[in-house]
Image (cartoon, rainbow, N blue to C red):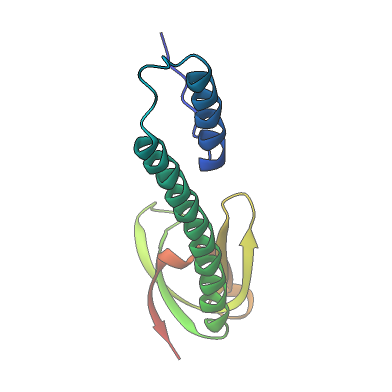
Length: 137
């Protein structure tokens, strides 16, 4: 039997909590009312969760912009990377020039277009930023 879990946003969790709180208030024992401090503490925790969620989203946006800027700074630079040899299947070190930078929406990654060699011997590679092991001017 498999279980399915979903990740809710803090807003969804807070809305569910408020529904539960309203039901709890409706059916509470008048001789033993809910503790106001406990409710306030829980609501404050939801507020903190919302702020953390917002910070995380903002940080992800800043990181994406920084990666895009960094990738663009590599244009016309020589980069070293490893690629699989077509005949042997073994990894070998390649050196090429970055001639394009683009964003892949499927992988949500900034990629580099790199040319290795010249003329008819030239070969095009597409690399992620993490594949680059050395950068030269």
